[in-house]
Amino acid sequence: MGRASPFRRRARRALGNPVLARNVLRATDTSLAHRREVVAERPDWEDLRERAAALRRHTLARLDRYLREFAENARARGVQVHAARDARAAARLVSELARRKGATRILKAKSMATEEIELNAALARRGFRPLETDLGEYIVQLAGERPSHLTAPALHRSAEEIRDLFLREGVIREGTALPRDRRALARRLSLSARETLRSRLLEADLGVTGANFLVAETGTVVLVENEGNIRFTTTTPPVVVAVAGIDKVIPRLADLGILLPLLTRSATGQRAAAGVSLLSGGPGERHVVLLDNGRTRMLADPEDREILACIRCGACLNTCPVYRSVGGHAYGWIYPGPIGALLAPLLRGRGEDWELPFASTLCGACAEICPVKIPLHEHLLRLRARAARAGRRGIGERIGFRAFRFLAGREDRFRLAARLARRMEGPLLRLGLLAAWTAAREAPRMARPAFHEMRGDHGPAAS
Picture (cartoon, rainbow, N blue to C red):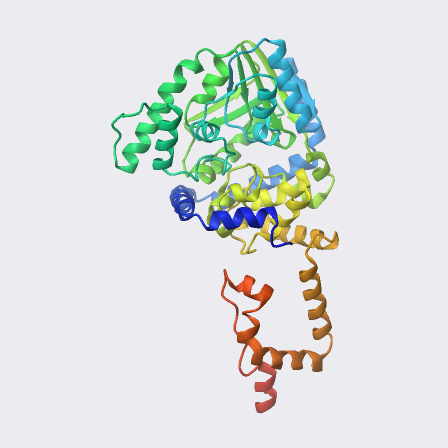
């Protein structure tokens, strides 16, 4: 792990930005506080988690069956179902559909799957200019950024920064009187965005969404929202396409009774979302693109498969001390935080992605908060071992572990090394890699005297 690795460079920039730190901490603290309140209202919360975990694992173990069932039932309702092996194929399918339909006004609802396939860039290369309709996505689109959070794309930006962005991009006219109070300003900004977007929402000829769940039993696309923009995207245009990972499938409509309370409380700290759309066919032309993009490869490994149980609530980001320190953009892809540190190397597999599992304290907070009980910290540790076996760790770390193995292999060597380390502790912590390691954390102090020395003075304890 080199000093100038892409993740380290991004993380250093983030750590040097106090405004970013305040924005991320304020937003995640608020989300966690709201979540605690609404979770406390559900005495059956842990039972729901157990049931959801069992449901997701059952489905993933039989995903081929449920995918076929979903496709058959969706087609029976007039929906055209497409399979996309990778991101390029999925983006090409949507772009070609837009070309065939002569689309000039494309609306996009919030969707991590379309971010994953970089759909906006693919459409732009074909001459299309898609419009993000989710407020957070609209903000990051104007700023030319990626989302920094799974459920709150513009979480990293303050109301004042968004005000300046809206003034620069003409969403708010120069000279407009704006309130100074942060809450009032945020409300005024959201109203300004709505005024700008509303007329364009009514004129679209192609809508693109993701999917929170795909119900095999009925061929239904389930969409969860709070702003109403998704319903514009799915009802105004004559052609609507949903892009969804194959892991989004659930067996029955009744399963939503387990998953929706977990999703809304974990994602936004709400008892229920403002809107849940169940689309089983519908007027106009409907398409669903089932995205693989590395998921089949994960399904083949029983341990990797468990990670696909994620319902993208973003709660693990909110509680992760690393994410809360550096924000989402430091991770280098659209999936940040603990779940992103697993998905990036397994789905994308670039060399730099294998550094992400090491960007964790392994504190286990992410596993405690996960609504479907994925042991995220255990998977992070497992991917660290996989990275080490593949030689993806730096030479300094490999030398360090070999040195420790040599010293710990014999008692006399270990005791000699411990005595030297106690005497040289101060100077050693100011040198090279140890100085870099202790720059951001407190080094544990060595015991004086050591336990084995105390035992030698007093003899073994009486049994």
